[in-house]
Image (tube, rainbow, N blue to C red):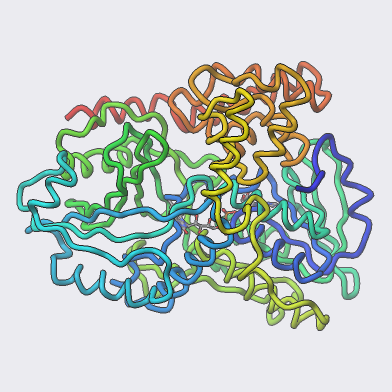
Length: 553
Ligand SMILES: Cc1cc2nc3c(=O)[nH]c(=O)nc-3n(C[C@H](O)[C@H](O)[C@H](O)COP(=O)(O)OP(=O)(O)OC[C@H]3O[C@@H](n4cnc5c(N)ncnc54)[C@H](O)[C@@H]3O)c2cc1C
């Protein structure tokens, strides 16, 4: 992997003229930077917080065609998702894997057996080239035996189908950024685009380095706004008054004790919406909701009534489920392409749009609107095609259909894992530490262990109840642009996405990170304070309040 991070001096590397500068390090932005760099373009990528910080980290983490979109007759979108699912399963096998989805059907539910049967059949048809199994049907008796905690009243049966799951989409984004950097891109997180000027045929983007306070002028021939739900705001800031392109809808998730080893697809009784309980580590991630949102995107929080809705509806299907503990709740905002015909939030198509602002007087400036994590690659391909046409350059063809992500050790991750564990268990490493390293880093797990070999403290666990070791922090600083405690606890590892959100370990992480980056005591305290504010938003009193009201019923 590239040696990009550590205390940074962005200035000299930003003096060149870039072909394209990408703003936003979510799934779309990193995929565009990766694709463009692989085609040989000169690329710069700026993300104001961290890779995957935005909508990506608040998602359901599915790599799917979207069974639900069949109801909207969005067959093209479903097919695109299913094709991209297969590509991601193949090119990022260490991060994306198949998952079984259990779909109970009841007498009284909005979508009955015949309709679902057609949906399942279509989903299989549209994924004719898949490597994962077709759906199966279970009778009511078989369904009860498979999921003993399921509400048996009115149960007609259940379908099992397969989709993709990416437990850490934050790391998928990170690896795309790493690969862009390996192919020459200048990549910076904690760097915010704040202004744009035109100098003849060239754009001059003002970028603020939020770590150093320095301001940089970055020259590029094309600019891509890939800031997801922030896109309209940024366009107004950089270009002046523009028509809004987005409808923004909020979705929340709650992390609760494990309900089932399969993902469960449920239909809410109160409004007929479809939602999921996805097994994620030893928990279930339940979500999501879908409501219009017009607030501050950096302060979006799950509200008590939203948490209550998910708990209440889950209890209808799993009456005996333990929902008296909600470890944390995430809240994100979908950047949906504005559709004047759609009345409700759920009716808005999930199709993306690539908008060239040439007719609006800004040739060379593009906005990427909408899209899902699942189709980040195809959206990027379409975007870079448009940019290459506009630039009129002779770039290499798109390579991302087959190019493996950096942590992929060939197609056979199972063999890599087996060999890695056998080799390092023999040297005294615990199996859970090794498994966790492969889950997070894929083949780069070897490099994390090399880092651990430098000093005894690096081999120690960060907390007693998780397998992560201190070498991961040092590796993160050197190779993965870790600059804050939140970067490390929430997006490079899952330490912070656990009960208690690692608040006890956070001060030591902040201190060691501060030492590695040469920070003052005040800077270390500020970093820690920032993490505490995130913990308050994700696991504060409002969440406990919702559990008191709804979880125990
Ligand atoms: C609740 C929910 C569940 C979802 N579930 C799924 C799912 O299961 N599967 C799926 O495929 N999709 C899912 N999605 C959709 C998916 O997460 C998003 O559509 C996708 O992540 C959008 O990516 P993006 O890159 O456009 O935006 P984002 O991920 O939001 O990234 C935009 C980035 O731009 C940065 N930025 C903003 N302003 C600036 C600036 N001035 N300078 C520099 N950087 C800036 C932000 O910090 C942010 O990181 C879900 C979405 C939600 C809300």
